[in-house]
Length: 481
View 1: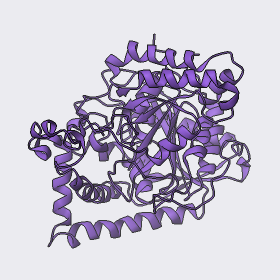
View 2 (view 1 turned 90 degrees about the vertical axis):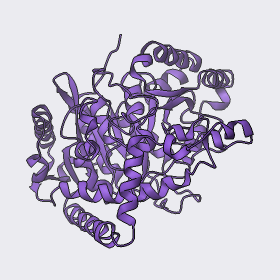
View 3 (view 1 turned 120 degrees about the horizontal axis):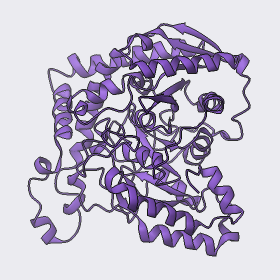
View 4 (view 1 turned 45 degrees about the vertical axis):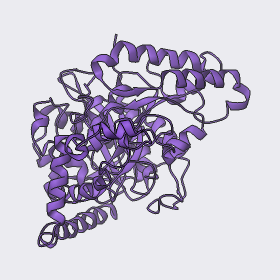
């Protein structure tokens, strides 16, 4: 059952060629074999996943029609999971076990998914390499000397190494698309508000977007259909109707599609292999009959400046709740636990979290808020209007997912490492637009990615474009033995 997608494994389960117990045991064996080096999981739900698999096998007729029955899924450790340790890769949440599920988690459990475990990430999603985790950096399965990207690096690395069938991540500005590109998998960042944020430990409240990380585009469409939709617990979630993304994948006339290619994307310092594979993909799309025009956008580097201020300002506010009197080891009724936990914010937060808290607090402080945060939000609006203007004339925008293939721990020491790595995603995230990254080749034996950015709530268009391109260039598979 090596490298099965959701739909492939589901077919095997329904035909009883494979049992859910066999599937779970396959992944647990691979986790035992490979994750000591990859460090993609923080928590492995070994007993619970086997128990859930046996329940499905023993109640097959009753449970077989649920969309994720018997499917082992990895969940980024930023989602609240009832009775399962939830750390956000930070010492400040050590021992925290939520009493409720995030809406996204509840929706996959309603479809009888099996949670294999919680995956590693940058602490509180602060980073683009999964290098700031208090549990240590995750490694890229294509080359363990490299990072998997972040902050959803554990979710992407575990999937690329075939330690799960699919995974869930979150993106604030590149945190799904970047690791998907670096690990050679598919990553879909939905429109802001398309998927509920309830139960997601907040990083940037006006930016956070949960989304699927999958082995192919069909799985991304299938999983998005399950997790998307309005949630009464999240006032920013949309009432927009959720389409049948999977069944509609081929319901598009490619010869009527117009795509914008921003020249500013190609003017960035792109790795040679990234540029070469991107231009090859553009040629493939043109041969499919798609009209692709070069256009001009605001310099993507404006996105770096705006995201740096906006995100850090929201971080300083969101992390204020971790004050040492709630959550983590301080959150229970055990007085001994409380006594043994001192200087929580000083010792609990890592260096990157402290840096972002300080920067954000400064940008929101009296005398500086107008000069920094307010000005940043004004430029953010200009970026949104610029992108909306292009998308009023075109069905999608295309570009490389990230300027380079996977980088190393040394590169991650740069305080602006994440902003530079995510430069091609930040503008669309600031505007709340949907984006998807799919693998489009190798450069020096490392995956490269291409992304499509769509109009608000038009995930269907970018999914369909990705699906047709994937059919032409093939699915990227890593075989770890």
